[in-house]
Image (tube, rainbow, N blue to C red):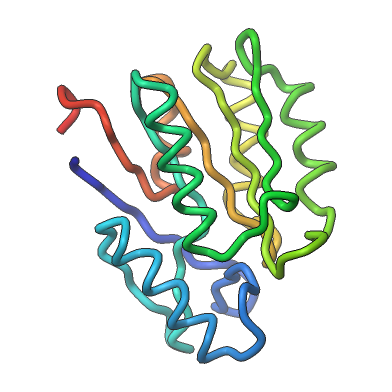
Length: 174
């Protein structure tokens, strides 16, 4: 499995926003580092020492395997099942679908400190939808992890790839 990554920093005073899975800053740093190491992601830190991994893109032709990987990311972040929102699209994801996601993403988690949104976009995303999704990926809420599931990385724009930790489970993309 080849894992590539790209890290972004928030525009808010140079601070990077991460999900609040723990109560203290030190616990949040340790938890996020453990998640990154478990996924094989080389992780960088900001000047404050906080982790910068918050959005993931998992590409796999095996949908079940991709969903299991997303589930393992959630369990490593100690996210309760009630705080995981699985959004499945029967057809290509459009801009209206992304607008609905934008409304859901700012809701607070119920049981955990962090929530996850898993977007199953196996049938592709329109260019307009991807551009709208960029806004969410650039500055997601502190308490949210976003996981985008696609069949191949070629389905998404390079700008989306640059804002996510890419986990490719396809053998030919390795």
